[in-house]
Length: 311
Image (cartoon, rainbow, N blue to C red; front, side, top):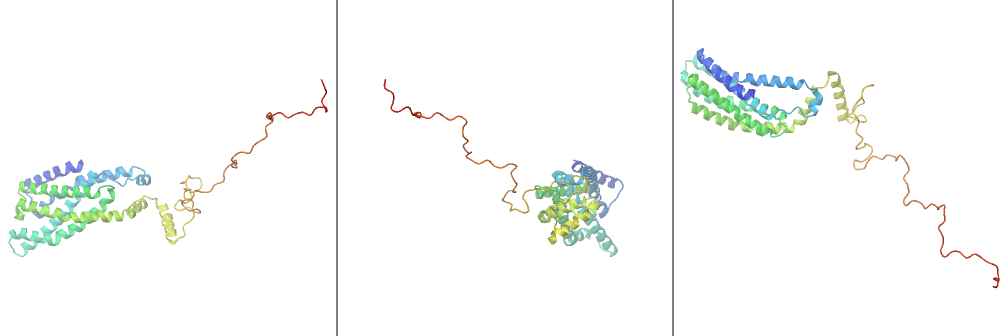
């Protein structure tokens, strides 16, 4: 919210201040766009301090590298605007000095700016936009391309605000160009910058694992970095110790629990063989003799005297 509301208001205020002070020139025309970076810088510093207040390594492991999409889109748009403004101010100043020193017509500054923009400014801006997009996409886990393209459109909107302020305050006469020509140039610039943004997102997705590992490494204490580097060297060389990457903790300190699945001595599809705490009972159970015999039928005949007695 600070970026979305503070940037246009600050740009308009800067334009009117320049008009009151009677300031003009190519560098002054880009001053509202350069001042737009102040709210973005304040927001970035505030977010960085907030992230540093949390435990570093647990925060990174929980995915705290991710940043809100609208916030990062606004910062990306302001960054593209500032880079474009710096290039335009430098190129306009050099072109103005060259024309005035050679005794040329000051009205030719607009044509010189248009030609130098296509030859010098646009290629440099495309490369810097690619680098910014490749960096910003690491902090957008989902829909990185959409958010960065939205930030690019926000950059074009801010550039339109700069042109409107310069047109109202009368600071655009030095270029001898109409507002319609400027708006057409903005649309062409945004269309040409779509390819660097998408290429930066693609590169960031291919290098995100390395970026995350470097973020973990930067947050490690200095005394643990050498241990991690040595363990990585042993792992690459095939000399990793038993249980790596879970080294034994220092004496007296609880350490991470080494997972027992899958076991390194057994294939991953077989569970670890552990002895039963007691012997298994056979089935079916053996028949035990009953203490009381069941009565037999027919009952057994008892032998009597022979011959039997007569009645």
